[in-house]
Length: 449
Ligand code: HEM
Figure 1 (cartoon, rainbow, N blue to C red):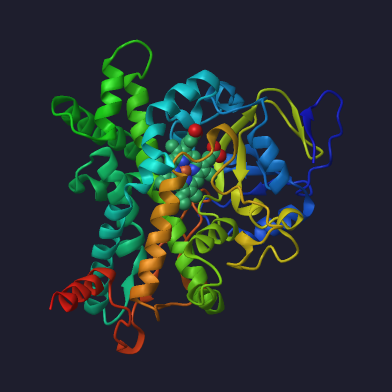
Figure 2 (cartoon, rainbow, N blue to C red):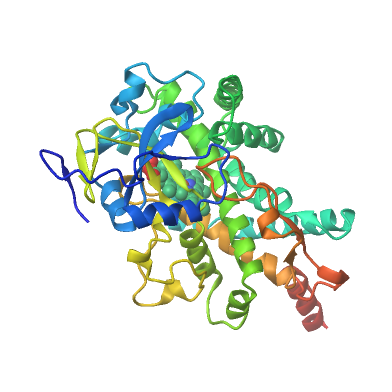
């Protein structure tokens, strides 16, 4: 794989065979299309919503190099079509491109914006959250059980478990009261969806900025011991640490990235384990860990499928294909995760023993380079605890619908299903494993006397 500036370099014929691949705004399972495109090359021209021309980097090695290429920018000033006025105001991907925060900043600007929040997400700080994450997880498992009881044994795991866990954690870190969280999820869903009408995008954006503005104003009046108050203090120091628009942009980013992604990861891991009971058995037998399940799910069914955007600042040759300067390029994480050239001929197989094998190539599903996922320690902690406690409390949990019938999230950015009906305790079988709290309580009583 080579990436270089173009200057007379080879231009391989369009790998999609003439017409760019149209990314379906309604989403759908990406893996069949990804395999077809990957067979043609590591880079594919794609048609974005509204007929906008873009490219996607799909091959693992090409993507790894592209993500750290010094002549690839994230700042929207390099997005040629936008600067030339060819993008409509309600374009569904506009929030990704224009949100004022670290994901759309380069160099010194990026370091400034990232460093303001980075200390909250270090592995040590995140590890200190473990007891609270366990507590929230166990309370949500009670809710899941109650929802199943009310629903003739079936409950939507996404709604009752996979969504409220990361939303509660990021909400508590930011000091966002519980009453705002449902509304924020709906708005975040709207601004990250790719199948949404222009008026709805504009309205959702306005409302999101409005709600976060209200939250910031309340925190300015009554600061707390939370990340929002710390960001406000940085803004109010004056100088160039953080502008008002950057404050709101950073809150948008943290709310959206802090829950939509982990929600998809937990959902996809539960689907994968229910569809591969032999892999679940390996974890139970101690031959793989819950953390291995998390890593293999990230690779095999990346929660972020196609991430917008990066722009080459000059024509760039990536694995033999020219990507013209100013092109909006998607990072094809779901494709890279199954690239056989990197992960071997069995890349399509969900195998929880893979992450610890010595020849395993690390997935890119949390990004790579300067923009590597800031929340990765938190995402890993939440997902590992969620899976371990879910399958300990409900060892026989199963899907209550055919995998193929599950409605997909209407987005090619997020990769998952929209609802996940499960039977936590099939056939009314009692929950086998007592919860740790119950167990320690009983042990304590037993030893007392
Ligand atoms: C399974 C869960 C997650 C996945 C799969 C994921 C994935 C990613 C990916 C792929 C990127 C790089 C995007 C790019 O530039 O191409 C990224 C960046 C980022 N993620 Fe995550 N993420 C997850 C959880 C979280 C959480 C819990 C947070 C909480 C704060 C978070 C915050 C961020 C931020 C702020 C960035 C931007 C970093 C930068 O531009 O410097 N993510 N994430």
